[in-house]
Image 1 (spheres, rainbow, N blue to C red):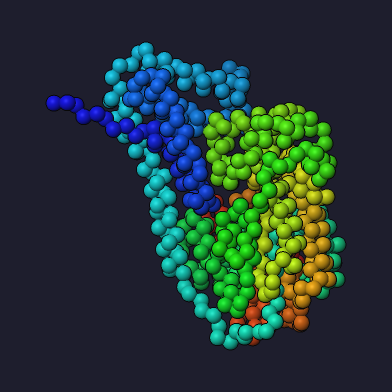
Image 2 (image 1 turned 60 degrees about the vertical axis):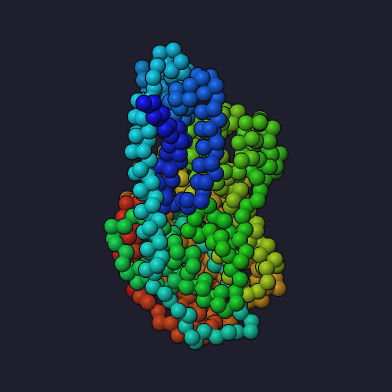
Length: 562
């Protein structure tokens, strides 16, 4: 009887597992849709490599083993090279740097080819074993993704419905509403006391334009998702999601509430058009808005001449971003956030690293391209916001959440590109303060970024109020404060809160009004509702390990204590 031929599928798993595992690890911050191009590209690459290897070895079974081996090396390379930040050395050599790891990887692939071509005979048992190992490996991340999606669906279905109050009045002239969320923007007293940064000029500018600045506001939560969910649903998480467990770790369980909030639904029923922006943060990227703006500019369009005009900090770069074929080709792909992360975990990270060294060999910095991408996105959002009042008819609800002054620091105080800000921690996008020195060093760039954001916000408000847009409602709000110095796993709650509420809308506001009560006040004053105010409470939590295990936060500044 003829022996059945082993069905070989481990190269497919080798192509998919690194992507699925990375997606599962980041599923709380990454929509599944962001991985489809990576999956397709990996499968195409695997098919081409398998085809070429079959031609070279003249044996499909052996070619499968070689293909899986090559894919393992490809996807493991970036993880190994990443350990160079810890100065891993062997016999005094930085063996995980590109200088050594790249030739070692090539030798491994050549050695595998030689073994298959010259030494190994029947490989059916090897293929069966690899098939089994592949299935066992991919089962766990697939389980993580599937169970997360089920939990997310259940949380969405269990969300209590909040019906539109029947007393809401249909007005003939509804005011435009601009909700501007400046990520991690602290309160004035916090900036002065903790960071020794005087923000009084910006605050006074807002007051001179009839803004009410709530001097003692605490965000209801110290996590963006939770803070904005409370703001836009006018209630606390434990009320909105009464069945949520304190042990739950998936912060994105609140995303359905955030994306389709009560405030949004109410305004849409009143006839408002929703205007939103791509933020690179899934929770606040309202893709189903009436107007949804994405940055259409390709990073490869940034030439050194353009950058020199916009940024003195790039002076002296000898190799043009556009003239450099490596950098230009790589940037033109316009990768999303997940794809950028995937590149950094593979051998393809050689491309951006090589590009950067050619651009400025004196200042190697792997975060350069990430910062450049964030700079482009933030600049686009700020520029587009200036156009909204004239471009889109009233009434409109503009939801503008910009990842600034939050890290990464990409603006100087003049708005120039700042790619070489020294990061205080191995993770370029976090503030893992370990001592007072790194704390102060980090905030030198942070406060400079605040200075630029102040200027852009001040100019926007001035132009908006002096234009023909009527009397809009303008909310300029921080979502949470910086990380706590003594406990970097949690963040502060002292936040900027400035409100332009025309026609007597500031009456009834008070210094410590928290976001959960803001739209209760706005709806009562402008739309005739009668919402009762809730207690102004503030909570924090370990946003990585136990985000729903809330701790009560009390006011720490004496001038704000009752």
